Length: 314
Image 1 (cartoon, rainbow, N blue to C red):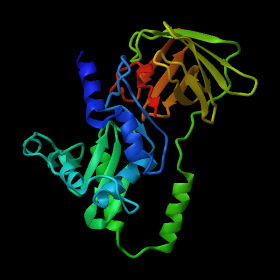
Image 2 (cartoon, rainbow, N blue to C red; image 1 turned 30 degrees about the vertical axis):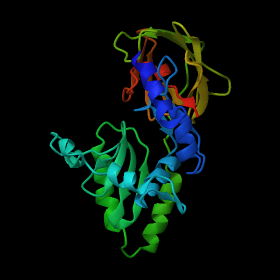
Image 3 (cartoon, rainbow, N blue to C red; image 1 turned 135 degrees about the vertical axis):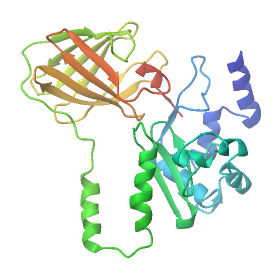
Image 4 (spheres, helix red, strand yellow; image 1 turned 60 degrees about the vertical axis):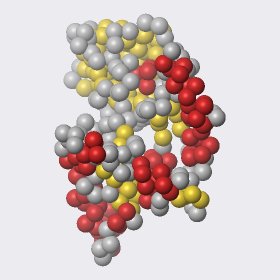
């Protein structure tokens, strides 16, 4: 009943569902990048969390706030609200926080030791530095979110408005061009199919009951992950490369993954990255024990079932 009231409140306030409103008034003017949003089991926009945006959209939002709610000569956000949103409430300033979190919280924006920021779970940032005329977007998966900010204050800020170094700039350009999430790889696989049951200490729920792994003549691996209600979830795992797959979900949309892995020391390890979220599943098969560990690098806010992380395109 509370969800019905919440949904009616969204439509009553805006005349349309939340995601439709955000798409029309914010995302399309910012460039029309794709986006997804999580919903409740009743199909209502979650609203307070679970919005999956591209880094480009997050950067455009930070730049909009940098210029007082303006984007490309258009007042996208009312200037009064753009100012109010970043002003910490007195109660938040009295909270027992540390580091940049000690600077309070406004309307979805956090204060900071430098400028202010929007902050999403496990390391998503829209950082605004008005004194430097700089906006920064960051997409990451970290447990201690302060470390990202510390790196920014240590390395970026001192370089702003200082004379450049041609050789250093070229070196940085080469490094940025080569940056990647390096894929896992391995040695010679065992012959035939390997099966294993879920290790009882796994973080993924018991519905993910067992797996099978076999290697194709082309050298990549095919993982079958048996789910209690969704059947056999097939994932293609690259050996030394990332390969893409999708899993069906009970909510309708599919969950996109990129995976790499290989055999090492008689065990099979793989990373399954949920590419429309910041999250990663770590998989380790021990054929001698006949078990597979299915763990999160960091457990999502939506809980340990990865199918709950699926977002609806809007």
